[in-house]
Image 1 (cartoon, rainbow, N blue to C red):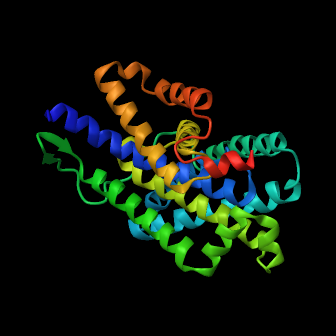
Image 2 (image 1 turned 90 degrees about the vertical axis):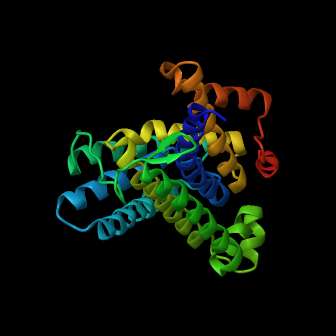
Length: 291
């Protein structure tokens, strides 16, 4: 295996891990509420911008990260409470328009709270490249891959080992049956939006030392995360992970061997092809049943 191919694969896995976290946010909210939250990318932006702001204010990085994730979770809870819950029984198109409007509002607020400049975070553990198979690897890449894997493992434990997680799974399978056995759907929705916002913030913080962050970074990351969620099967956790990694690899290999000018186009070509030829995605059986 050539060093160039190794470099492309590592780059693809790094971006794919970020897409997977964003796609997981889409899947969690969709399962709980059947809402496709197009404000998911703004949680990524809030995580990166808030952490940069807190660090700029002189706070140590660990505390800044915790506060940034907390801010994003709070925004997610407010979004569910103020925008989604009042119209929860509205048509799907109405809910989609509301989340798009929330996305635009959050970007506007970000320019007021922070600014329109591009910001970066310091690398978590230095910037000296690491040589792997002839390729050069930044230490931050290991943080991205490791933290993403840890987040996925924590989600698996949460959904399979905690009462709240099992309640969320129950609601995703059958909301009426879950209500009949005493599960609070309202609580499940709040937890879903908070958890999704936290995942988005984590993605934004992890990628900021590599690709920087700004008030509008969430637009493209949100769309690519949505493409990954569709590719894996909307509503499927394993599908979101597989779709994110696959999309990241296709982007990296396509940009490396074809042209980097079309890097952002690959996600949308894959999205259209999936909708036409594989509308249920890789693991989309449950999603197809809902439709």
